[in-house]
Amino acid sequence: MQLARVHGKATATVKAPALKGWRLLLVQPLMVDGSPDGFPMLAIDNLGSSVGDTVLLTTDGAAVKDIMKSDASPVRYAIIGIED
Image (cartoon, rainbow, N blue to C red; front, side, top):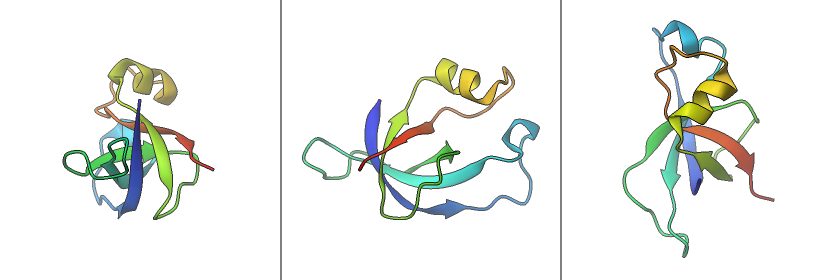
């Protein structure tokens, strides 16, 4: 798991069937001190995260497949919590 900050949303005109109904957000992983850690990435979200929110990501592909209830999912990152 890793903290990240939401920078925006992504729109796709064509998606893999497993992504239908999922929001795609652009998130920037963060280091412990709040500085950026690597490159921004896309993550699915069903919690209603907003731009500027600090969120908790799971980077476990198997956990994401469980969340999505799909073994054919191309997704690797999912938002599983929003920091208060």
